[in-house]
Amino acid sequence: MAVNDYSIARRRMVEEQLVARGITDELIIGAFLEVPRHLFVDPAVGGRAYEDCSFPIGYAQTISQPFTQALMIKQVGVRPGDRVLEIGTGSGYQTAILSLIAREVCSIERIAALSEAAEAVLKRVRTGRIRLKVGDGAAGWPYYSPFDRIIVSAAMQERPEVLLGQLAEGGTLIAPLREKEEQLVLFLRSGGAVSERRLSRCSFVPLLKGVG
Image 1 (tube, helix red, strand yellow):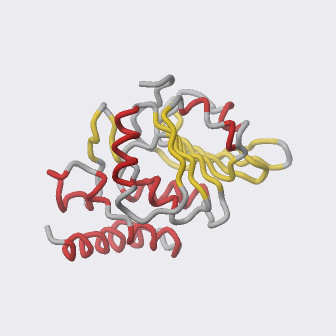
Image 2 (cartoon, one colour; image 1 turned 135 degrees about the vertical axis):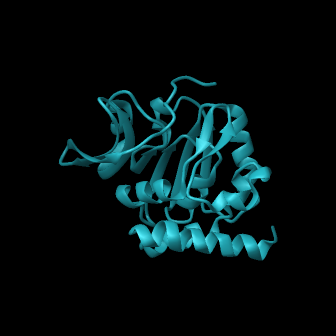
């Protein structure tokens, strides 16, 4: 597929999968229009990279569908001045998107090979400021905390107390939680307390602790 064809597919993705489903924030739309998703998936996928679905990226991990990623970014409220912690670098696609919106993105991946592959692709595209780390996402990244926004891209079995401890006052954290059913949950730190709100049902690969 030619470069122009990828550009057309990317615009169609944004119009049909994001805007048509209520994602209208100009910063989010602009980032999704710019980042070449096809570079972050297996080359054999080709133009299908812009379809409304997830794709395997190896090591039993996936790149989520564009709408799911856009919805999480919208719900957590990422803005230009924010320092964002991303748990689960994966392919690096969402990392690139976030970096074009936020001031800085700190992203953790437990599988070294995935982190290395993501870094290689991220060097090929325009991004904002990104810090990558191989480590246990459940432990967060205390050195750069507190974070204004935290996005967890894998399902957690329990409330993320350690990550909430790294959340700034007025900050938000979004994560898939597996309780009776898997749901996206939004946490807000305000006045020293943390409140939570269930958003919608979802399906993510599980968050594994430790380093793979």
